[in-house]
Amino acid sequence: MNKTVERPKSSWASDLRVVWHLLAHPVRGSTHAERLESFYRGQADDYDGFRSRLLHGRDELIDGLVFPTGGVWMDLGAGTGENVLRAGARTKTLREIRLVDLSPSLLDVARKQLRVAGIDNAEFCLADATRLEHAAESVDLVTFSYSLTMIPDWFAAIELAHRILKPGGTIAVTDFYVSRKFSEDQHRQHGWLRRSFWTHWFAADNVFLSGDHVPMLHRRFDVERFDERLGKVPYMPLIRAPYYLFVGTKNDGV
Ligand SMILES: C[S@@+](CC[C@H](N)C(=O)[O-])C[C@H]1O[C@@H](n2cnc3c(N)ncnc32)[C@H](O)[C@@H]1O
Image (cartoon, protein in one colour):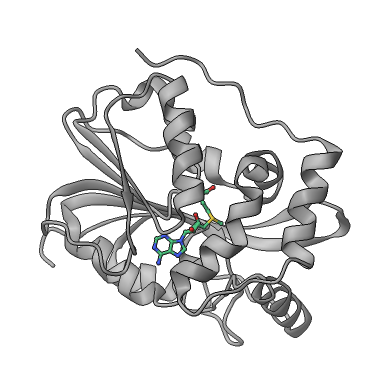
């Protein structure tokens, strides 16, 4: 039985620990997985409170999704399981929810939180979202929230999502981004300062904003929804970071 889960809270002390990790904690490791775990290990328990004020669009994205009865939902780069918690009782009819992440610390938090919430149709998968072994055309819904920018081979992750989705299946993505220097007419154009500032600011934490995620999503999927926004960043009152929401479907004929 799914229970209502308390929303993430944060305190000055937990914010301070997160900010220290973001700004000062050295990230070590010789592989992507080691670097991720080095980044997240010390802040896993404080993650949700701070990120709920930074990672805009997640709740709106999840609230707008349809969870098909008997279907399979794959959340790639699932972190602490916030998306599944947000979907809550609406996921009860799914046959399976699979949370995939490369950070054991974050997946441990997800496991605990989903147990407390009484969500018992979830599987936790410590794996690289670019190399996941999963049957083609077997998944109804794939989500990426703020994970594409942390996956160096993000194009491989999008190709994997396309491969595992059933024809007509849904992909839903929200993330930070910057526009290309010359964006498509129908898309927002970010100026040099905005593109340069956010690209370098996030790169310090191995978050790689790109002007190519959005065009690639538009190329591979039929677009159901695409919104471009600016969001607040905690402790930076005067500036806003660009993010987007994308919902698409895998074309039956592809
Ligand atoms: C900013 S967090 C977002 C987590 C969660 N989706 C959310 O919205 O709170 C990015 C996540 O992507 C995961 N990640 C990064 N690279 C990955 C990869 N190659 N395979 C699987 N997960 C990855 C990280 O461990 C982290 O949990």
